[in-house]
Every structure is written in structure tokens, then in C-alpha cells.
Amino acid sequence: MSFQQALSGLNTAARHLEVIGNNVANASVVGYKIQEAHFSDVFATSLAGVGSGQFGVGVKVGAVAQSFNQGSISVTDNPLDIAVNGKGFFRMDENGAVTYTRNGQFRFDKDGYIVNDQKLKLTGFGVDASGNVVPSAPIPIQISAADLPPVISSSFQLGVNLDSRQSAPTIATFDSTDARSFTHTTSASVYDSLGNSHIMSMFFVKGAVANTWNMYATVNSGSHTAVNLGLGAGVPQPFTFSSTGTLTAPAAPFTVSLPVTTGATTPLSFTFDPTGSTQYGSTFSVNTLVQDGNSSGRLAGLNISEEGVIMGRYTNGRTRNLAQLVLADFRNPQGLKPAGNNQWEETNESGLPLVGTPTSGPLGVVHSGSVEDSTVDLTAELVDMITAQRIYQANAQTIKTQDQVLQTLVNLR
Image 1 (spheres, rainbow, N blue to C red):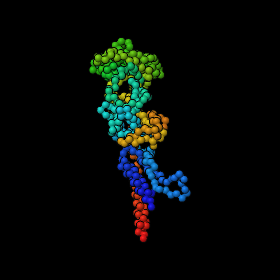
Image 2: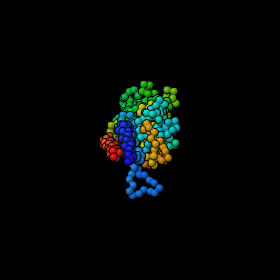
Image 3: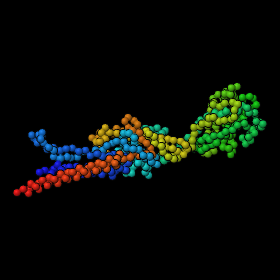
Image 4: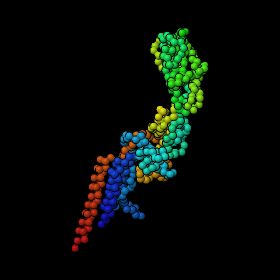
């Protein structure tokens, strides 16, 4: 009498319980993909083949496969936590050895690389000097903490409305410290080659002739240094308006030169464009005030887009692309070899990795400040555990019954 069927059933049920136990143990592991035990029946064969009356000799575990279904997305307070929604794996590097993972719990190491808990480095594309992403072979992503260099002001755009109802000032000689000598004023910051800010104050003086104004300018209010508006230091720039309030002169931008004593390039020169200015019968207002310079900036934080672009936020209000992470997909993810620590390795069965940026081709999107939860359903696993336990007990009962039958046979006289 054969005990083989029952013994195979016991072994298979025990393996099934191991798979279930492993799933339960990993129920809280970020990016974990549930394992499923697949079973196969076993038949004895001979050279004569299998007859119609042949019965099986047990069961075996055909495979322990992983199901790469999408897990739920949970929000975290770490901007470097990244979740993949859709297809794709993070591509990780350890001294040239590449592995793949769905666990997006990342942080910085001491050298500025984005790494996981095992110190494997996240890979992606770098950027050029202008912050443009340069697609190439993926490399470990290293975020530079260097200050963003300053940008010297090269253009200035001003759009104001000068109140046509105003009268010429009572004091004919302009004095930037005497409000009775000008009609309106406003100011803005411009930046020299070292990133130093200079406050340029603009003063508008209504002319005695209708529809005419003069603009004066000074730099750094403490010294009231006169600015060269292209006609000489301290010489005003005439403004002329039509009878409908539109600006007729100057008809084109003019050059402004500011004296600089900070050690930066001097004078600080830039084009000044007032062509959007008007003279209507309404209160003075500044409608446009734009200049293209800025001071140096220190990295204050990061944003990661759905396309995986890592953008730095700087203390001067500017942003800059720093890198772009990549994802990898496989024709047969089931063929990946589990390597522990939430990592998989490429095999012949998985096929070659299809590497690209998030949202490109079949690859999914990424979400910053989020993680992908384990796909383990604890309720389903506990029900499966009960089922596997019953199967184990049933196979044990089969052995017990066969033993009793054999004992009966032995006791025959």
C-alpha cells in the first residue's frame, strides 16, 4: 500500500503554508508583491504509456510565482519617497551591479546620492549647465548642494499708468528726497554680476506741457546716486503720450547704467522697456515690473514631477532641473529573480530591461511623497491559511487511514 500521495500532499500543504506565512510576514513591506503557490498533479509513466485506469501518485509545487499587481498608494511626509503607479521598476546601482525594485523609500547619503535603506543608488539621467535633461546611459543620481549662481540683470520691463489729472510739481528742480519735486515714484531691485541687489528708484515728474513727463532714477536710496538713463547721469528720460494716453516716446527700449561699488562689473547696464506705459485719467499704478536678474540661491527643497524630473527649489525663488529618474520594465516580470531586500535581478527568463522615463511608452507615473503598499490582502491570506491547514490535516488523515488498513492486513491469521 502506497503512502506517496498523502506524503506529497503533506509536503505541498506545508510549502503552501510557507508561502502564505511569507506573505503575511511581508504585509507591511513597501513595494512587496504577493507570492502565489502553483500546484501540479503527478502521474507515474512507463514505456507503455499511461493507461486509462492510471491514477495519480500525488501532487507537487509547480512554481512559486509573484503577482505584480498595482498596490495602493499611501502618502508620506518624505518628498524622496516615490511610488510607481503603473508598470516599471526603479533601477538601482551598487558599484555597477544593477537590481530593480518597487520599494521607493529613498533618502540622501553623505555624498548627495539618492539611496535606499541598503545604500543602493537610484539611477537616472543628468542635466547640462542650463538644467536641460540629457538622456544617456542611466547613472546614479547625485544632487549637488552648490549654490545657484547669480544672474546679472540684462533687461527691465516697466508698465505704469501716469495720472493725467495731475499738475506739474510746485518745485521745479528735481530732488529725490523732496516729494514736492516729483509726481509719482516706484522702485525695484536689479542684480549685479555678484548677485548683489541694488534698489533702483524711478521718479516721474509731470511736465508743464500737456502729455509730457520726465523720468529720473537713483540707485540705493541711502546715497541717492543718479542713474544714467542713456542721456547722462542725472539727466531725465522724456516720456510723451498721445491724446489717447498711449506712449509715443520713447518708442523703443533704452539703456540704463547704474554705478556699482560692490566689486562686481560696473556699471551695471541693462535695457529698459517702458512701452507698456499709459497716461489715463486714473490713479497712478504699476501694472508691469519685470527684470531677469537674481541673486545666488541655496537649495531649499526638491520637487519630483510625474515624469520623474527632480527639480530643485532655491532660496532666491528660482527652480532648476537637477536630474530625471528612470524606470525599467520587462516583457516577463515573472522571470525576475528575487534577490531579497525588495530587489529583483534580471534573468534570461525576464528578458532585457526596457529602460525609459516615467510616462514614456508603457511605463507608469511616479508620485513624490508617496509609497506603494504591499499587495498582500491579510483577510484572503488568513482564509487561505485555514484552507491549507485543512488540506494538511486531510492528508495526515489519509496516512492514518492507510496505516489502519495495513494494520488490519497484518493482523489476518
